[in-house]
Image (cartoon, rainbow over all chains, first blue to last red; front, side, top):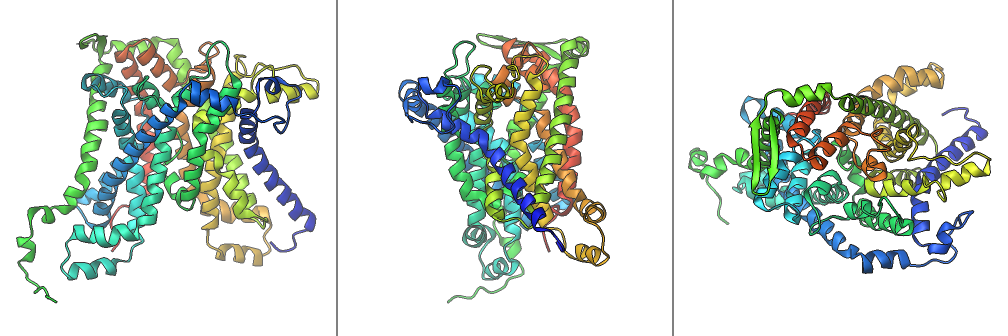
Length: 278
Length: 307
């Protein structure tokens, strides 16, 4: 902007940096506390940077409470959810972006797909619970993974339609003229060209499933319990081990943070359909 | 190399699956929707009009007409839950959109390390809600939580953040605002960056003040994006469950029973599936309206294949 004063610029810069610091503080505090031993944890004033870092909280979680099992459950559930949702959703996205179905069905299908995304899971979870009980899918990784994949299909369809649209039409048409059929074109041209988008979509679905709480709480119990539920279970009515709690929070966050960095470029597009939040 | 002779009858000779490929591609999605969306929804409606009992060898169901709904409208806790949810949605949405907008306006200015700051700013979005909840749960801890420590420094008595009926709900709103403001920021920031330059140049040639430019150029141009962000937040905030469940189990008492919390309690604590289904049915009706508005908005230019 013209005529902006130096003071004004510095002020804006300071506010921007302050906002970022404010956003990061709770995360920093959780990480900081997770490395404190019992004595330092209760110290007042609290030490701003851990003085005698220890891994005892993490050891207690992983060795004593077997958090590796919950982590593995979360991993398997998220992989099932992402694989199924990405496969099925990509096919639908390709169909919807390359063919025109009669009676404006493209619009109606997409409309339904996105509307379903907006429905609260608490509505369908009661019948699902009953069905799962009969089918023996309660408290199983597959059962939870399937429900998650259903909730994430809209995200996949939405993102992949966008990526397929970015592919120049003539490349596919050339192959069609050469006699390849549509599926071969999808496999040989569309998928390779949309590969980065496909990977980002996979990651977003993975994160979404990894973070999900309500369905995991209701549909799993002991065998297939996921990490978020195990973290929440650290808060009991009586003695809360805060050190463990902080370490558990960090453990649940680490994988998604790494994955999100890989998919960062496509985050905005994914979020437009409420991609990653609750 | 063989050259395929173009044959007008080729289409007719193509295998059935190739002729119906469009349908086949959307079929798996449709099947998933029927299995996990449609059938459970129908069942939920059925439950809503029934008394449902879980027994050891299955489920028994008897129709009871409108009884569950009558109970829903008579129980004060249901009205409370609806009111608490409305309060929650209104407060967090306004706070998140206003704060996110301010941040977006700030970061689209001439700021140093813009990309880096933006990257850091959006970290909360992808964090598991459970991690966010436990981080704040500890900061709210009355004895050695950081908030009471800071209050103590300026001579204010400790606050029972999560166990005071008058405070807990608002304390938890703050957690949601912390996690979702980066989300509104990101969408509005992307929206601002995508705005055309010409109107701004015209306005600055006319010598318009920044406030005037904001009101007459930025706001109208950003309107559709703003609308999407508000709707998304409303729809998402209305189903709030995880943070409240983790931090207070809906308490203290029933003071933080949102609609989803109430349904969860009725369904999976009281095991009254019929009543819980009736409540969720009513809840869904409200959300269908909002969801439809939102999807219509988003779908404006995504409806048909590009030609």
